[in-house]
Image: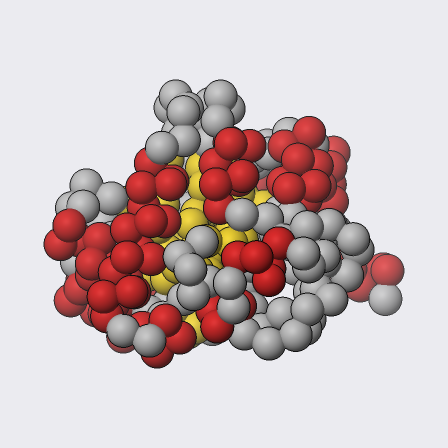
Length: 274
């Protein structure tokens, strides 16, 4: 197994080295490194930062009293000692909970404070709450606006704040009310003619697609159409190197510290911005 992994990575390195002169990859820590740390906690983001990352991805949901929290799942059971749906609870109920590893559920405002003063950031703010979960279009728009205002309040220089979602409705709100916003549409499909056409139809120039089924030819086609390509999932070193070979512009990783250490030692010719 180890020998197979070594040869697979070596093959990807050899193939990708040809591309290193022209290709730049923006790597980012997915949920603060969910397979290495306690996902979406301040501690996870801090350790990724301490490890040399300036690229991050996170998920935001809103409670009944309008407070936004950093959490991926709609329900609390997988990651915390709580039960039920965060969007049906109050901030007072959430604040007393702890993650399975004993950390508090992070508020959006606290993550903004963490990012303050840190320059050259790349942050993806994923809109997880939906109209159905929040109960009305009005509350949904309130939520999207809160996320936007919080992200844009980060005191930083040379940084990019990107708003992402697999639900186009939130991105459409931003297109209408904040046309300058950087947007990324997440699609649970490979990059292909259909997904490229979808991006062109809705006027979004960055796509987050799945690596399985994506070809280098399709990445090149997307680039010719002016579309930036972000690929997922990124659960291993092999995933990262495959993304490099395919020509991804951006790559999430669940093992950011592992990837960075491996690439710096074994593939230093890759032009990766962490």
